[in-house]
Image: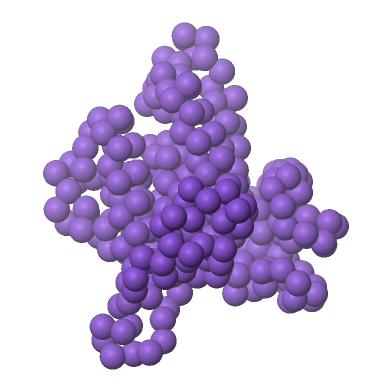
Length: 301
């Protein structure tokens, strides 16, 4: 592949996939440390019916309707969980499992019954994303990076995930101290007057924002791997929070870059003419990184 083909067909999917992995991995560190890693699973399930609802109402896939639809779905999920817990008299974990799986199934059924032929939104897209199709058709080579006309044709998903990644990184940097204190010692955080519940809610909101922004690139299933695998692998590498976040960012970028490369080139190396799902391969590489960290990580004990 020459430079022109790389810029046109690989540069933007690679950037979008890397930013999506990074956006999910950063808040994922705090979910893992708080032993709330399955919240990433829950969020990825809940946002799907919200996104589908936003599309059915507006007829388009854009940032604000998707966010509003996801927020609505989250509120509905909370109400349903509380109702099932109270009237069914079952423990919260079981109520969460019922609601999240039911809402995800409802989102899939709504996609099956909807006319989504005009946009990249179907069941396969919901599960695995459409990373391979996010190409830069107006690019003619590296010179396009400084060409205003060509830059105007960049996939809108790149701007969306770039903005969300910057917002998440800045939020973690600004609220680093209260986040760290409340994560490791909630009781001490309360004695300092920190709003522990608000901080926890903020982490959930930031995670939901990352899940929605990453939806186009990697789908709602692979988002789970991005929330959990890089941070969990990073936790096995160090006992320091700052170093863990740095490790998780590095693992997320490695998984995205290597996964995208292997998805396109790996089958050819094995004699096959068919590529595999880029998002699926990104998730697979993230899982392999976690397995290696579990076996050889210096802080695994």
